Amino acid sequence: MNCPDPQDCILSLAEAVKWRNELRKNGKKLVVTNGCFDLVHRGHASYLRHAASFGDELLVLVNSDASVQQLKGPSRPLVSEQDRGYLLCALKPVSRVVIFNDSRCAAELAALAPDIYVKAGDYTLEKLDASEREALLANNTEIIFAPFVGGFSTTNIVEKILQTGK
Image (cartoon, rainbow, N blue to C red):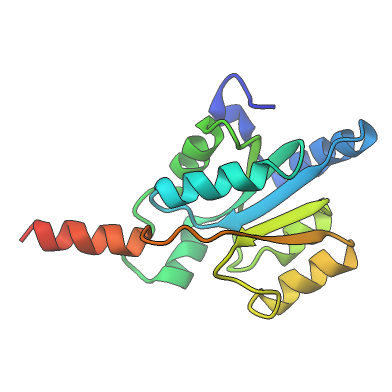
């Protein structure tokens, strides 16, 4: 269920674990996915809608500004972590967001023990980060790979902007 104010849907890990435990107590399935979501585009929207369809609530683990920079380089992120979290929480499929500081979210996945984990179809079980995969498997989390929506990427959008701006 979405929050009346998207800002209220951005939780700390401890708050998210408490929320997750309430869901479990009420027989609700939690779906989790993760990513940078630097510039939210149609590919993200399609992916999030698909991910949400597998359970009752969708929690998105969002890379912090520091971890995006570590993963994508010094010119990123383009949008701050709080603004990315707010935007995601404003989308109908997203129930809650947790911003995490590491480049990988294994600790968050272990703590949340989601029923279902969804990753884009350009991943496979072998391509998942080993620590994240281990956390998921240790909790018997079902892992689903959503169809990949090609032609959309933040990197391509940035490159197009830079090319047309010259």
